[in-house]
Image (cartoon, rainbow, N blue to C red; front, side, top):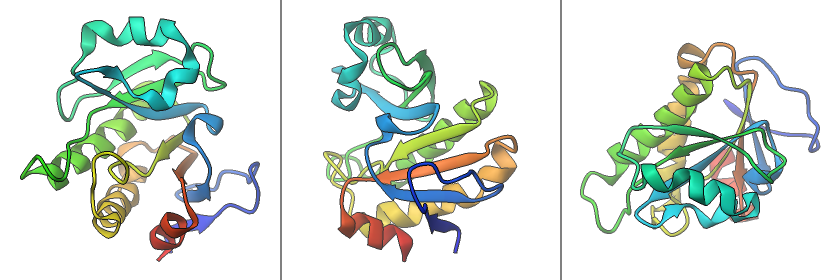
Length: 170
């Protein structure tokens, strides 16, 4: 299996492997993935404080397939990689846009020498992707991460529930 369950929050990174854990992305990793849409940065990074929102305003909405790397501000993460995904119910090409967002996040890590990256199960919340489809797209992109970002030592997928954890493990 490409994904393996981390033994604990401090599991050592394994080259060419991804970790899956039930946690919030902003509590793990050196870089995290978030979103910028018409309203600005995702509420998930509200803990970064108002400086992050102010920093991102000129870039909102972020174009599909593009990334923006910002400081983590008050987050425990040094960097935030922002990408934009599409609503499954409002965009016919939402699966392709999700794939582009995931690829952009990994490319953002590579171009900014981020070696540890935590990302949420993109698409499974307000974007209303069927969880199995989001898991398949995520697995496809993560399987290519070594070729895109060879120095990425740990790519941790953070899911919000046992259901999603079990689905992404399958």
